[in-house]
Length: 150
Length: 301
Image 1 (cartoon, rainbow over the protein chains, first blue to last red):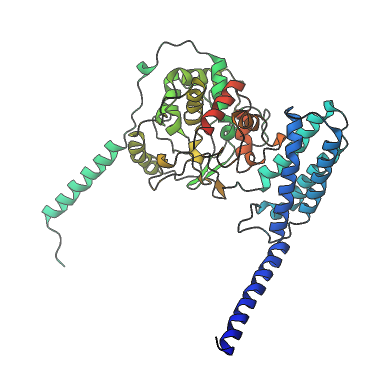
Image 2: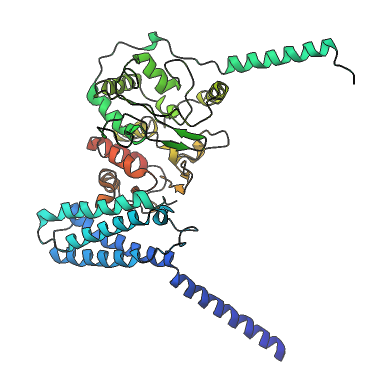
């Protein structure tokens, strides 16, 4: 391989690495991607709570508190990741989020206060109502502001 | 310029007349006669089950501001690609509801897609699925609706082509569509599976959204319940096939819980694109019926 060919190969390889890294940086900063990640964590944190609600697992106040707090934190994080113009493409965000911003903010706040209430639950009797309130808040927002998934 | 001969004018007139006659004949509504109604003692409780299984309320819900929002008094705008419909008031009010509909009127609407005055309904009303319902179930459903509190309503005319000719032309589509046998899945499997198949495909009309349509606007049965574009125009309707393989649900008990509770128990896939209201209707079914729906759906690989 001649000197110039080797330089060419190196610079081609290097530019691919830079492009890939740049792509990763862009994806990491893309609010649609970030809020999706946050919501995935919310969904994961729901699973142990559902197991308690359907009596697959025993009631454990510590498990409830830990997962409710994760949900609360991730909901707050996601709420800040809906800047104007971040819909479209693969995002399931409906345009109503921005045309009815006040309604969307209220729906998000309702979910956050339901998560706060859930984190404070210490006895089994209060757990299922708290669960339904939190799930209901998620549902109300998704029904209005989220597109269905294929 | 030479004027067309008298003979060719006559020939064109005859052709037009033949075409008009053929159109008229082919689009002729064919209602069932009143003698099609068998002797039957209506079971209102069964009618209520069918009312929820069909999620009638999802489309026929009361318009905004109604005094009793839990009654199916209709009038909430229903958007479709051809325009906006204001669904029928299903309460027994004689003026605006079903009060003056006879049993055969109701059966012709559900199974033949015809209004009591013998006009074609646009298929936004899913009679293609309802025609697979048992006659006794149709009569029970009517009995349930006739026992509701009557509500008088007023809503604008449908925002769709109002030309008599357009409505009449629906008859051409129906001639083709109704020539297909009603979709009844092969009847192997447990009683629960059969019950589920009936609830999903006949009253439930799940395929109206979850089965893609072909270019003739007929359900593509080779892709039964495989998902497709959302009829409201935004987003997509998910596939109901391979729910187990794709690890959407663990088993029939899991899907039963999802249908009964929806997102209240964190089943987040079930509350977008209008599904939340459908799920609330399904949740009102007896547990055995929800379980039957779950078993049937999970068998769709």
